[in-house]
Amino acid sequence: MQAFLESLVPWGYQVLHSIQSWAHPWLDAFFLVLTRLGDAEGYLLLLPVMYWCVDAHAGRRISLGVLHVLLLNTVIKLYVAIPRPDPANIRVIGYAKGFSFPSGHAQGVMTLAAYLGRHIRKPWFWFTLAVLTLSIGFSRLYLAVHFPQDILGGWLLALLGLALLWTLEAPLSSWLSRQPLLLQLALCFPLPLFVYFAFHHPSRVPAAAAVLGFGLGIALERRFVRFSSDGPLHHRALRYLAVLPLGLIVFGLKLLLPDSDLSRLFRYTLAATFGTFLAPWFFLRLGIASKESPPAH
Image 1 (spheres, rainbow, N blue to C red):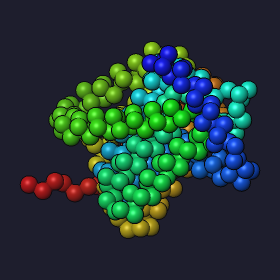
Image 2: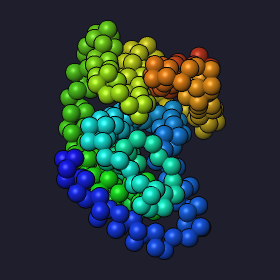
Image 3: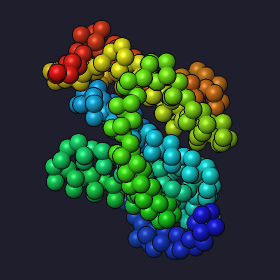
């Protein structure tokens, strides 16, 4: 695969040069802003809205899908190891770290859009999601932080990942819910820790840690909290304020802890566990949320 992708690099530069032939400072600014929607900060702001404020059940499924797809993206990136466009060959407008194929923005945004479209089945909403998915993918080309094959590969892998997730989601969820808590917690570790120890690049840490923290948090929340996102609008708005301590865990602790893989693993695992378990637990204690209704028999 690496040889094939490397053979596409000259074609990729041709496409990037064609796109940038009509570059303009206003377009530079527009695409720099638009592409931020696919950054980690975008997920940090959006996923809690779904889980805490709109629909906790859908929020759990969406977060599960997005985080695992992004972990897959990280593994493929590190395995294939295709460099990003070289500033010596093209005007690189944006800033991006790590390797190029496949595009995490393309793969993650398409996954998120598919889950949201599955939840909100409105034609106008689907059209908006399609435009955003295509626009954010195109922004990565305009900014010259990805080749076109990276975007196409990201979209294709998103579709394959969604097909796998949606096939396994119901039976795995049903099986896991019947297992003892200790087994549920133990099963959260193998995949993230494999990625952490199998690769030695800083980019592996956030996705691996987020998947680990999400799994631990959901297992604990399902056993001890069983949080419902229902409630009056002002309660939902108050819950969203918890995004502030969530941001402090991710970015504030960065200033206090040494810059190492282990500290990043701790920060992102803690942030995901806070978002899925600790924040809902606090919502119930503060009286701005309630437990979900027991299933009808």
